[in-house]
Image (cartoon, rainbow, N blue to C red):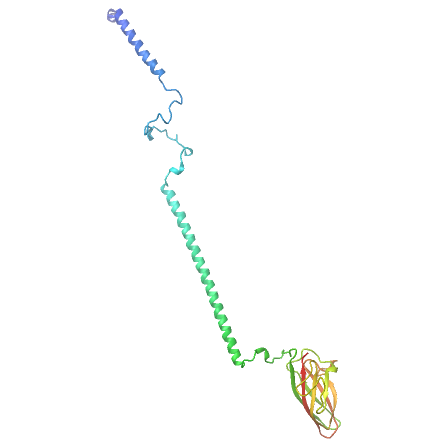
Length: 260
């Protein structure tokens, strides 16, 4: 310390003090030149000046990122492909379902066509086997005479003296209604009337019985073929009653009925 004090002079002290002031002033100046708050903007930042190393971890969040600028990451790309594959699979499934439906419809149409063809063939075969006559024209137990149609037939009976003979008229097809008593007409040999103009003829709703031969018998009247029936002629049949006037009596003739 004594050596140092011996060396200190006014000039040394003044020079040291001046140097200190210069340095302190530079620091003060440097402190005064610090940039104010919010003074640096995008224009003051040089391109490429901000690198990944200078960005604080976690400083940039998703809300600050423009998502449209990002490419698809590998997993997202796989997901997009999976969606496309699923849509394609759905489309193929729909195509297969549609094709199956078309095939089903085609099969049903083909079956219907075959059925129709078979029906036509059966109908044609039936027509041929029936000689071209409609099946409805053939008689069954339920056949009914149509309006305007005429039905004809023959009858015959015999009886001895003091006995009765009967003649049954069966209606086939059966009539559509019962015949009231006033519409039952017995015609003697060669006799005719307005409602019964001759054999195989009858006015609508009339039963005309024509006699072509009678000997040793007398006509007594019409009776019902069914016990308890009030109307003589039912839809199915009617009886004619004769009495014998000779040892051997006989009668025969024809009948006609036209449905009203």
